[in-house]
Length: 246
Image 1 (cartoon, helix red, strand yellow):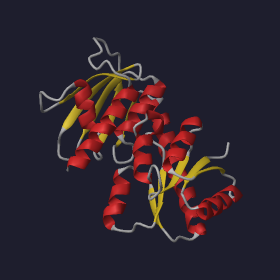
Image 2 (cartoon, rainbow, N blue to C red; image 1 turned 180 degrees about the horizontal axis):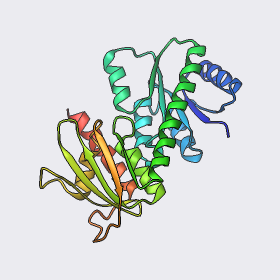
Image 3 (tube, rainbow, N blue to C red; image 1 turned 90 degrees about the horizontal axis):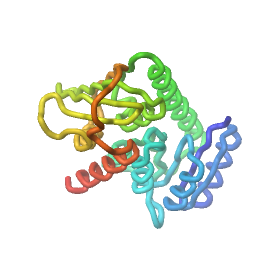
C-alpha cells in the first residue's frame, strides 16, 4: 500500500503543486488548508507522513504537531515543516517538537520529493527494527532515535511485559515496569520522587540516552492506573507548560 501523506498549507498553489509532485511518485496525498482541518483529517485517516506549513490561520503548524504528538497513535508520525521562518530559533523549535526535517520556503519541489522519500525510509526502518526487536526476548536502543513516547506505543501494541531501564547521558537511570503493554510502576534509581505517573511525565522529557527492555513476568498492583494514551497526553501538556514557563 502506498504511503499516505497529509499536507497542510494555507497557500492553495503550494498544496496543489506538492500534491501533484507526490502523487506522481505514487503516494496517496490528502490536503488541508489549515491546522484544524489537518487535525480533523488525521483523526479520520492516520497519515504516514505530515508535511505542514508553520504560519496558518485558526491553528498553526506548531500547535498542530503538538496536538498530534499528544496522541499515542501519532507519537512516531514523521513531520516535515515547510516555512518561510528561517531563524535558528524556529528550526530548533521545530526539531524539539519532533520534526524530521525542516524545508525553508521558497523550495524546489524536486528537493521536497527527495526529502519525503528519505524521511519515510528512515522512519519505516526505525519502526520495523523496533517491532522486530520487540518480538525477541528483549529490546535495547537509543532514545534519540526512538523516543519514549513511540517506544511506549510500540510496547502497548505488542502487549509486552517486562522491565524497561532508561539511562540518561548524565548517568541518571530509571526503571519502568510494564504489564501487557501498560506502565504499572515507574521510579528513578537515584531519587525517591517522582514515582509512577509523575515519573513517566518526567522521563518523557529525556530526549537522549539508552533504553533496554527485558521481558519478564510482572506481578503486583498497578500503581499508575492510567492508560498509555492518558500518560502521553498529560506528559505532552506538562512538557509544553514547562517550555512556556521557561
